[in-house]
Image 1 (cartoon, helix red, strand yellow):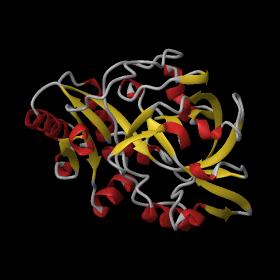
Image 2 (cartoon, one colour):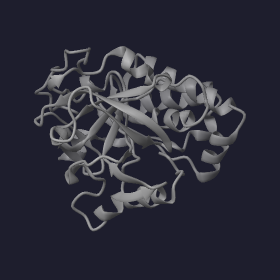
Image 3 (cartoon, one colour):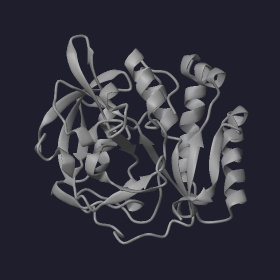
Image 4 (tube, one colour):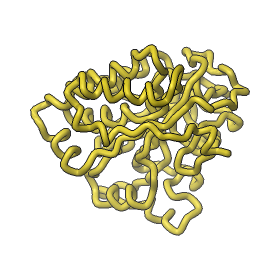
Length: 290
């Protein structure tokens, strides 16, 4: 979870929303244009949320050290991704700030609440709208499948966007009147001004688990982004990598054994001081939804 923001407005929005929490799940694979995988899945009894709760001191040390902690965390993320005891799905809900573009109100952060007006503001003379967005790992759609109604889904190369000029995005159906395939727009993402390219649209019947609401929710009002592959700890990379250790784990074995495995990874990578800060929920998301 990001503890600090670039703008005062961002600080306010992070307090008013839960959009900087992470989450995910498992079963199937979304490759290129093959996005309809296990669409009827509703069994999440072995899927658990994984969250990061660093203290302010731990967060400051990580963000400002000489890169040692960054590279330790990078190794830890690789261990999570490659583990044979469970499947890990990186996921985060993290709004982006759309610049000088009109978008549907339903897509605003805090839509339908008394705080909705706080999602519109001005930065450096430009009109900004804080829009709901999620960042997902390459295997994420095997857990929460999508149907693409136009364009395409993510390809493996899309996850290299940290080093490209534009971030490819898939939009929910609410954006049909605002953007078309191939359109580009600019927005702030974790304090950095980036360009985004629309590559596809998601069917309104496709759903994912929204942890703040403890229920399945349509992708309708979301901008879906690929989680950028991070290898260097500069700029916003450290914050993005920290988000990438959050998400969902689908267990192949006992819950306590998996927890021990994760704690072992933290120790092996020199992050044993974070043992109390990396939490695997004791209830599956199936239990939370019931």
